[in-house]
Length: 190
Figure 1: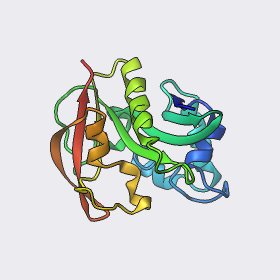
Figure 2: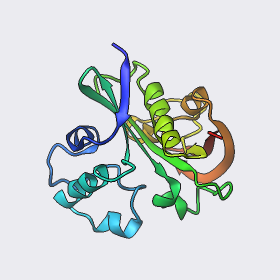
Figure 3: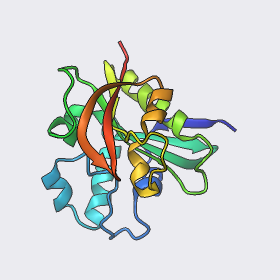
Figure 4: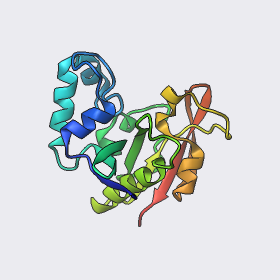
């Protein structure tokens, strides 16, 4: 059965992908790049999930979900860069003044990894941005040169994954994750 990617509008499915096993735990919920730092750090416990519930109800949604049949198997955080912490990030440069969208998280559920789900997931993130008129989409993956990336840090993707989706390197960054430099990859949608 092919993987289907849909806008992230079902809170329970988003929670399955990015929420904690315990609702009161202080985990990311994929908010660290989506919210201003002060708001992100102030949210504790169940307030984090409630904030994600609010984002899921907004238009545009906070990302896309990949489904294998009715089972949610993947998540990609994608939104206008202006609404993310990348708008103010000193380590990830701004290439120009276009109202680009950013992809900052690609996550595939354990048990479903190694099946190439990340590729339709990234394509679905691009499709969502395109449907809202984005002139371009950016990602900030690690440039790992084919070396293994620790699974907990692989959420930003790899340069190869973005290149395979048609993105090209637009700039170097001063950001490093898991010992690998991050690069700014861009796909022009105009």
